[in-house]
Amino acid sequence: MTKGSLFIISGPSGTGKGTVCKELARHDNIYLSVSATTRDKRVGEEEGVTYFYITKEEFSDMINQGMMLEYAKYSGNYYGTPKRQVEKMLDEGKNVILEIEAQGALKVKEKMPEAVMIFIVPPSIKELKSRLSKRGRESAEEIEKRINTAKWEFSQCPKYNYVLVNDDLETCVKDTLEIIKATNERQELIERLLKEI
Image 1 (cartoon, one colour):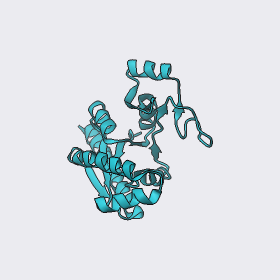
Image 2 (cartoon, one colour; image 1 turned 45 degrees about the vertical axis):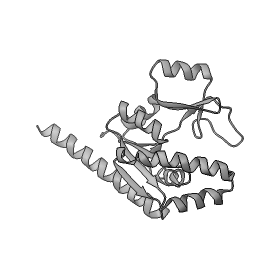
Image 3 (cartoon, helix red, strand yellow; image 1 turned 180 degrees about the vertical axis):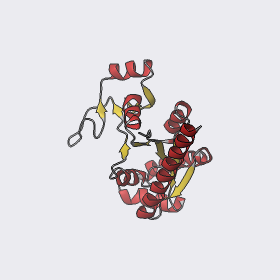
């Protein structure tokens, strides 16, 4: 069985990367990685689907044992990507998608250089501001903070293998699936050639 490939999808808040990832996860050979967190489970969330819910002590042990591909702390809680689940899915031949911010993405790339990095951008900064405003979840000040964070995130684009514009969801998903297909075909070709040597 050919091992699956690892894909990292990043992009500023408001680019629709979460929606793209959910669409990709509908495909049988794609697994959307589930993060671990120390925050409490909210109503409607499911263990192993929304997050893996663990204690701060367990999270700390996983960090110390090198069992986290990346992690970060937000509002007093830890969030991170457990290495074991990702490796298990890859070994089962699944294409694994990590939907993480740029800082975490670069940490994963250091540990797993074979990861294919895809950065999703909006058609323009003006459109990004419009999308964030339409969500109605943040104040004008919070939107400005997100835009400033986005500026740093955009500066990381050259470190990614691909940059896709999410102007049309269907097209963006289709383009991402093409990248996944091309990566798998390359991997299969390399494995076949190595066996023939």
